[in-house]
Length: 266
Image (tube, rainbow, N blue to C red):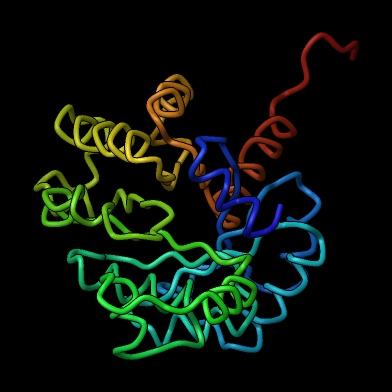
């Protein structure tokens, strides 16, 4: 699935699944994960020191395997978004967005490049619309692009409707760790107040016709809760990461091997 189709899924509520590259970001890891039946791979440049060449190789390889390459940039910046898009990212996740101005800026960078500056802001605000020829050109240039705004603070939650109302935003992505801290509930992912906020975001995003994403850690979120969240509106399902999956698999498999054999004759 590539970016254009994933953007459609975000808006119509279809659930898509992916995982995150953290500890083993390389073209080889991307190649193995591309065969795992995933819809997207999440490449994190906010927390992982990745150079542009590595990001570009991973993005282009994943796209060649019909797996959507998604890059999280380090912070809200049209320059970083342009760099990620130039590297081949088809989806962009922007962390810690809190204002309508930031949303307009990131939408402009992801959906209207190479148009920049005051001209694109005039178009997004409706004060000076683009002519049909320019709009058609930009639509073709950015046909695979989609953009998710990170909701990771109480401030963003309180402004959620205004943020989601900015034209051409495709969805929101909940950063559970930062959001829990902002709520005064650090890493209390089963606290009723944390769950209330998260589930409310899912519902409001679905009502607005936008995608809603969450980074699922299996040890923190029971399967039944995952299913409930999907019913409420979670449809951009980021499951675990390469390091945790590797560690959990080793623990399970070696645990089985180390169990003493029973029922065997001496």
